[in-house]
Image 1 (cartoon, rainbow, N blue to C red):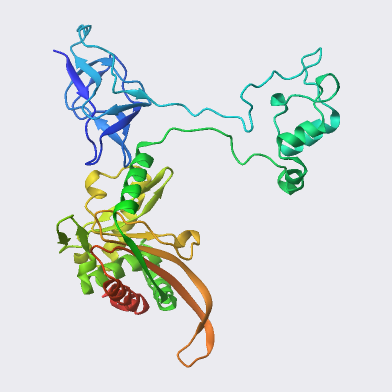
Image 2 (image 1 turned 180 degrees about the horizontal axis):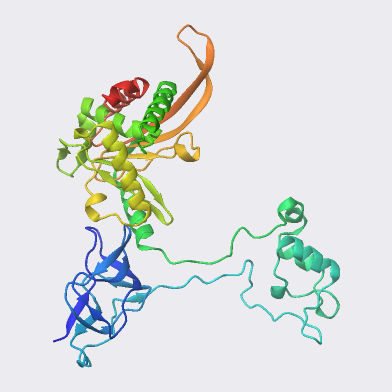
Amino acid sequence: MAIEITMPALTPSMTEGVLAKWHKKVGDTIRVGEVIADVETDKATMELEAYDKGTLLLIAVPEGSTVTVNARIAVLGEPGEKVDAVSTSLPSAVPKIAASPTPARAPVSTPAPTTGNKGDIKISPLAKKVALGTGVDVTRLTGSGPGGRIVRRDVEGAQGGGAARSSVGIFGGKPVAQDGVRPVSQMRAAIARRLVESKTTAPHFYAEREADAAPLNRLRASANAALELAGDKLKLSVNDFVLKAVVEALRRVPAVNSSWEGTSIRQHGSVHLAFAVALPDGLITPVIRNAHAKDFRTIAREAKDLGAKAKAGKLQPEEYTGGTFTVSNLGMVGVERFSAILNPPQAAILAVGAVVKKPVVAANGTIVPGERMSLTLSADHRVVDGMMAGDFLKALVELLESPGVLLL
């Protein structure tokens, strides 16, 4: 008896997925638990396992198609079993549009290039030299010279004239990329929906503090040296200290660890700490479960393991859902300060900037070299007020400036 394989909901928020790749072909024998396809969800590309056994009789969805949850994607059955009664059409499966280059400044109707007897484009030597230096595609130009010859002014007009030519410099005026369009991935579409929802429905406000990062950097260097001496491959990062400090700051100001639920505010007794990880097509926020009950080294190890799984697209739904507070750190790419958008329904997110060496005023009034790190809290004003945000940042700065307590 034929068995339909349908698109499962691989993540809690998934309503549709892209059939990225088939690992099996029609006629193959399928075993229970065997990976038959890869599916791109709103969070990651995940493996689709078979829940039944049999012979793959029909693939109803080609690779690259967008399929709604519970729609048919394939059919299993007995070898030689007829499946004519099962329609192969699937209105809910929409093939992705392949990226198609769009020429810059292309007119509505592009005339054919003017050519000579041998099929070569008729172009003056000077115009050809200018075109080579600026990256202009002469096959798309209409010549204004004698006999339709492409001349210098045609090339300069296509690439913006003399002002643009003078700015070419040592880089040769080559395009920075191929013009074109690309389909929006499931992840990027989900990010777009959630960020628009967050920015338009949650009243954000921002509070910022700077922390003296010198004590943290000194402790981190000595701790890493000790770990290396002990043969431990764990290498502590600034972000590891920030994650642990956030947990302890939430212990001191627990009201920040809350969520808006419309008619009520949920106070979370546990800290499920999310942190942003950049991916090629967006970002994902793995969650360190019950971070309040874990020591510094456990948090550091879990953060590294989850980060690696995120970049490999191997996170399971329970590893990136249910966070109660999020940390976003752009310090590793040199961003000194920024404001993050809330990750609803969480009431707050912390943006962490790079450690910057700068002159600072010491307690005795003298100017001395210092190391500073910006900490910007984005908060939902329906849950968090200014004083509460200030109390949280105060606690966070105290912990980061006395980082030894984080190791206890």
